[in-house]
Length: 111
Ligand code: 5GP
Ligand code: ZN
Image (cartoon, rainbow, N blue to C red; front, side, top):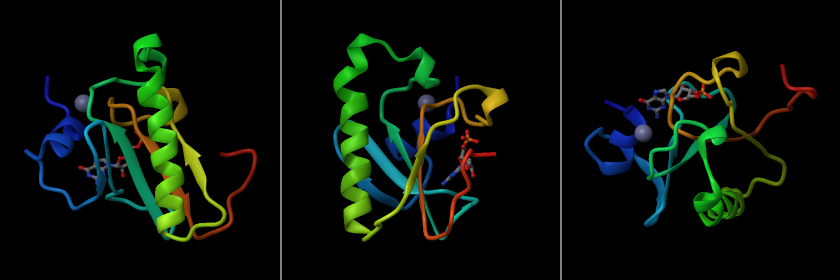
């Protein structure tokens, strides 16, 4: 299996990381949809949120707190944090990721 986001997380695919720790990596989206558009991923390969399980409880909570820290670091007051789960919801990369987006108005409900 080749997974582009596993490659970014393990350094085999070059990417400028915005944040990294033992469990989570964040980097800029290649095709940004907002002035600030980061992707937060677990180093562990989980294809999508629906494939996470109880063992991932701490990891998932940690990702949310990293999102909060990055929002603080980038001085984002209003931001949107999104995960697309499955093709029909817009998921194009099968490695769990959260989009952290800011810098423009967001519509609700999301399109
Ligand atoms: P999804 O559509 O799965 O929710 O989001 C995948 C995101 O990953 C898209 O916004 C896309 O622009 C981004 N992306 C896909 N491949 C790469 C890559 O190789 N590097 C980076 N930085 N972003 C990528
Ligand atoms: Zn992966």
